[in-house]
Length: 127
Picture 1 (cartoon, rainbow, N blue to C red):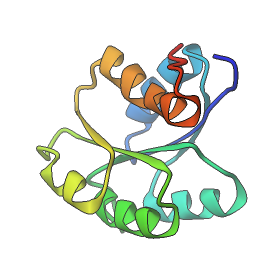
Picture 2 (picture 1 turned 30 degrees about the horizontal axis):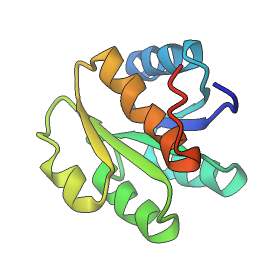
Picture 3 (picture 1 turned 45 degrees about the horizontal axis):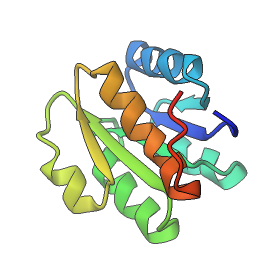
Picture 4 (picture 1 turned 180 degrees about the vertical axis):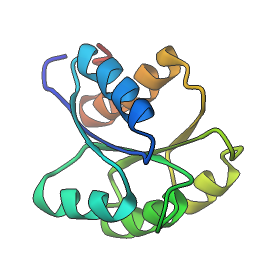
């Protein structure tokens, strides 16, 4: 990748966060992880993210609620929902750009996150 894209992963499951972080880091993305939606909102105040990947079921605020807030404030941000419990309909209705079922398919993850490069320059830069 010519430019490292900045990705925020929001998931209360530490093992899932680490797995996604490792895959994206290896693929050339710059990755930050947080364990809940409130922490995600705080991180976004201090840093610009090209992509947010959020889990559905988390304590406090669901991923769909986070998506609704982010979509209103950052209409061009790529937001991807992921869940082992949800079919993706709630995420798509909330405004995500895509949905990944758990367990994650690594190729689908890289492909979907890589679409941010296509938006920026019309040339896919998938790692």
